[in-house]
Length: 369
View 1 (cartoon, rainbow, N blue to C red):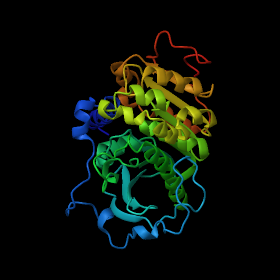
View 2 (view 1 turned 180 degrees about the horizontal axis):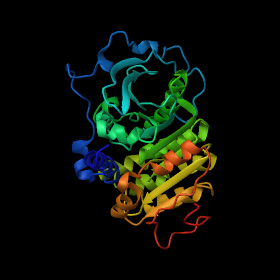
View 3 (view 1 turned 90 degrees about the horizontal axis):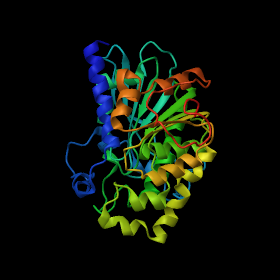
View 4 (view 1 turned 60 degrees about the horizontal axis):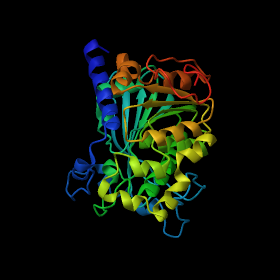
């Protein structure tokens, strides 16, 4: 890849991360939160194809999906046949499949499977960015070249109630108001996506990692706590510790905050708190990155998340967003740690230069935690 294209890729990846790290003020949030799209002819073939029958995904007489747990019992969700919307084989570096997969009525998921050329069965990394996000980044050729660099397949999608998956609902219902549903169904989606990927013969499903930030990191924690197929996690600023997070997060509109602090709401989301599930992670290697001036997750909630993490976790703190972009993202190294761990299958020591000078001691040293 040329220097110019590499710079474009880095700018794209940095911009995507900054969008996740810099949540908008809540006065503006209500204006820009995803809204139910008007019915028109601009929807993708994945949403219109008459052969992609949503009723085939889950019959009404089957067991209901349990939103109180990230666990997904066998047979609760029955997938319909995946629909290939587009296959792009024109780039010399990668092949991009744009698929629609579905296991719930009215909820087709746009799934991107991007493979490096010249690698027979590449290891796999799932990418789940924080709410709000879209799948547009996976159409960017430079981004796909970056994601598949060093022989990795990239699998991209968005969480429930996000992007194209937000539709046919009243405006008052969104990711936070339906937090139990959003988290549980997305954790189930990760397991169903792994099931689908395992049916293919072109991926190394013994070497699978997941990158997640914000709500995507939370969902990765929930999925990894119940599914050992995720061998490595790379997490940035996960949401969690729900009573404190909902009380103080900058993402929660003040006009709605009181509703989310009611006992009945907190009771619903309590079983999906990553503080509860972090000690049960099945991933063999986990890196937790925290950007200290990002306030979407309050500092008090972050401390409880850190305290719940297993002692083997690789904890890295950055004083601010500038140091995070400089030390974790610049020069194309954003995914280096994750790729090293997935590819090797063994723990590798990986040191960055921008941890807080006086981090709280959660066990272990700055370089090995």
